[in-house]
Image (cartoon, rainbow, N blue to C red; front, side):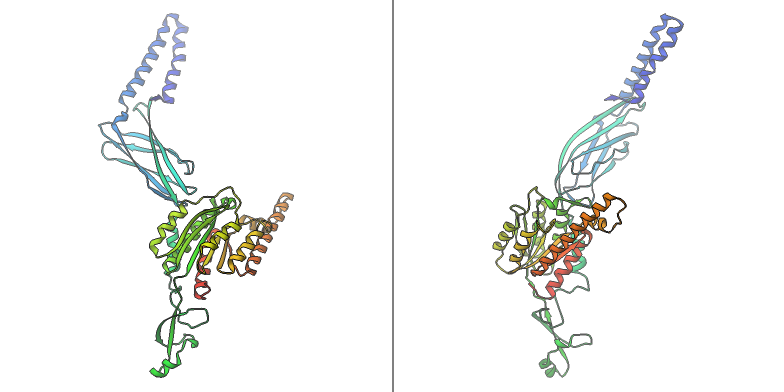
Amino acid sequence: MRPTPRCLLLFAAAFPAAALPVLVDPGLWTAWLIQVALSVLLAGLDLILALPARRLDVDLAVPPTLFIGEPGHADVTLRMRARFPETTVDVLADLHGDLLPQPIRQAVVSEEAPTTVRIPLVAVRRGTVAFERLWLRWTGPLGLMQRQVVREEDVEIAVVPDIGAVRRAALQFALSRDVRVGQKSMRLVGEGSEFEAMREYVRGLDHRAISWKASARHHKLICQEFRTERNHQVIVAFDTGRLMAEPLGGIPKLDHAIHTGLVLAYTGLRTGDRVGLFAFDEQVRAHAAPRGGVRDFPRLQHVTAGLDTTTSETNFTLGFAELATRLKRRSLVVVLTDFIDTTTAELMIDNAGRLARRHLVVFVTLRNVHLDAAVAEPPQSTGALYRSVVANDFVRERDLVLRRLEQRGIFTIDAVPEAVSSELLNRYLSIKRRELV
C-alpha cells in the first residue's frame, strides 16, 4: 500500500494551513498537529474501506502458442469475493522483451459478476517468450491510499510461424478451380506422364490428346487424359546466416522465408509430393527427411519453430555438399537465402551450379523495396545522390548474380515479402505441370 498524490497534497496543505493560526497567536501551533492527525485518520479510514487484496481473485489465461505477425491475447479475470463498492482496478502486464509492451488497462470490479481484461500479445520474433508478472493497483473510496499487488506468473508461450496464414495461402492455390496440378487433359511433352483415363473429345481439348485407335473402335473421337506425376521429392532449404536477420517490414528475413517455405511445404504435401526441410549457415542447423501426407506438416512446423539466425557467414560449400549427400534421388531444392554483391556470392553461385547438375534448384531471395525506392527517387541533396548511386550498385549486382544463376540452369525468384509466396507457388506448379523434376 502507498499514498496517492491526493494524499500527499493533503499532508502538504497542512503546513500553510498551520502557519495562519501561528501568525495570529503562537500558542495555536497545535492546530498543525490537529490537521496532521486528521489527515492520518482520513488516510487510515480510506485504507480500511479499500478492497482488501485477499478479497480479489485473479485468474490468468494465456495461450500456449502465438503466431508471429498475428496478435493473440491473454485474459485476466477479476472476481470480488466480498460485499464492497465497485472498485476500479488498473491492470499492467509485465511482458518478455520479444512481446510488444502494452499500456495500463482499467477494469471496474463488482460483486455482481467477474470482469475480464483482455491484454494483446504481439510477438516480434519466433522462439519462447514469457508473461512474466501482473501488476494490479486500486485506491480506496476517498482516493488517498492505494493498494498494489504484484503476481509473479512466468508463463512461457511458444512463438511459431503464422500457420493460419500458411494454410490460407496454400489452400487458395491448392483448391483453386484454375489450378489442377493432379490432372492434365493434354498429351504434351513434359506435361503429364501417367495415364489417367479416356474421355470423349469436346471442343477446346488439344488435338494431340486424341487417341486414334480408341476413336476408331468407338466410332467417335476419344481423348486420353494424363495425370501429372506425383510423389516428387521437394526440399526447402533455409539460410540462417547473419544476412537473414535483416528486418523487412519489421520482421526478419528468416521469418519471411519460413512463412514462404511452409506455404510451399503445405501445398506440396496436399498435392502428393514428399517434402523435407534443411537449414544451414556455417554448419547444418536442422534437417527433416522428406515424407508425404498432410499429417506430416506439424513435424515441419516444429522444425522451423526452432530455427534462428546466427552471426555467422553462410558456408554454401558445406551446406550444399551436405545436402547433396543426403539426397538419394533427383529432387526439387528450393533455397531461401540472400546475398549482398557478386564478390560474396561467388562461392554461392559455384556450389549452386554443382547442386543443379543433379537436382532442380530454385533460388528464392527477398527484395528490399527501400533499395528500389532509393534508386527511383530523384535526389534532392548530395547525400541523397550518394545513397541513390550506392543503392543502384547493389541492385545492379543483385540482378547480375541472379542472371548468372539462371545461366547455370537454376530458377530464380526475387520478390518482395508480400509477393514471394505466390510467385514461388506459381513456379512450383509450373514445374510440376512441365514434369521437370
